[in-house]
Length: 197
Image (cartoon, rainbow, N blue to C red; front, top):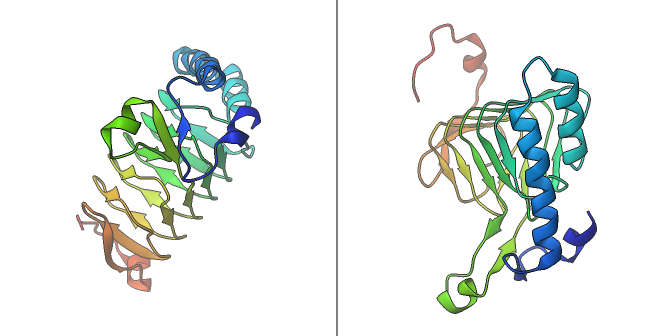
């Protein structure tokens, strides 16, 4: 993690003017540019670049470009992970993603936030709080996950949701703010005709 070890969860730090953080973010952007512009035929090179960027990963995962993050080293993904196009992860703090997680297009996972008061915000101060996504979670298109959220295993987050608080295990959740709609049941395993929530 290097310089990011100095970023303590929930505490303010200088995100806009700290030269070390700026340097690391620039290095990350260079790697992301390479990853996002490589041809699909250059699969081996793409895999090498993304593996160098992430904090930890398994052999079996796909992140469709374009993909964007702040540092990369704070992102830890489990086995059989799939993220569709335009995933954005602001990883000032740790983002832990479990096994068998599917993420639809245009999803944002944010550990970073800014002070509400103008004076500190204009000083470039920021805070970061970890995000955890459990095993077997499906996150629909256009979802936003804000700092400090934990999404329990086996849950589904409906498209367009804004997740501002923890979501329990084994539920379907939706809305702005996102909330539990119902439990995932055995009946869901037998559904042949799918409909909107």
